[in-house]
Amino acid sequence: MKRIVTATVLNQSGVLNRITGLFTRRQFNIESITVGATETEGVSKMTFVIHVDDDRTVEQVVKQLNKQIDVLKVNDITEQAIVTRELALLKVMTTPQTRAEINVIIEPFRATIIDVARDSVTIQVVGNFEKIEAMIELLRPYGIKEVARTGQTAIKRGSQRFVSESKQVSILN
Image (cartoon, rainbow, N blue to C red):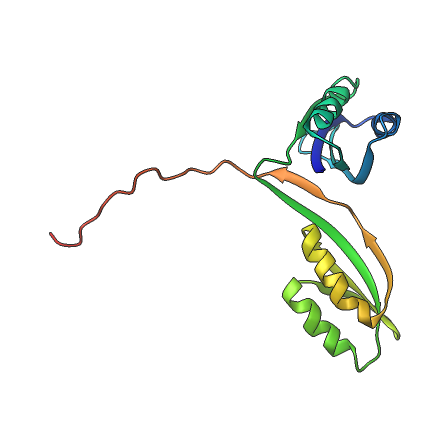
C-alpha cells in the first residue's frame, strides 16, 4: 500500500543520504521524495511516498526515522486530511496545426505552455498525481518527448470549525 510520510529535519549536509540509506537498508521503495526549506531557518521538510506491505511496516519506518540524529519530527499523514501537489514539465511534439489542439486539451487542467520551439512545446502542470497522469495520457498521441516530475509534496489541511447546530432565524417579526 502507498503511504505518505513527512519528516522535519535539520538542514545539514548528509541528512538526505542517511535517511535514504535507512530506506535502502530496510528494502523500502521510495516512489517519490521532495525536500524543501520550511518557515524555520535551518529546518527542512521531506515528503516521502513509499510502498509498504502493512500498517506494522509503516510504524517501523516512522520509528526508524525518529531515531535518526537530525530528524526532528516524523508523521505518516496518509489517513489525515491533506493537500498533495506535484509539478510536471512535459515536452510535447507539435506542428503549427496541432498547437491549438494542445491548448484546448491542457486548458481544463489549468496547465500552461512555458516554452515554444518549432517542433515542440513545454507544458507546466501542477496538481495531484491523478490529474497529471490524466493529462499525460491525453497528450501521449501527440508524442511526448520528455517528462520531468517533482514527486508529491504534502501538507496537512488547516483545522476547520464545524457547525454542530444551526441557529434558526425567522424573517417574520
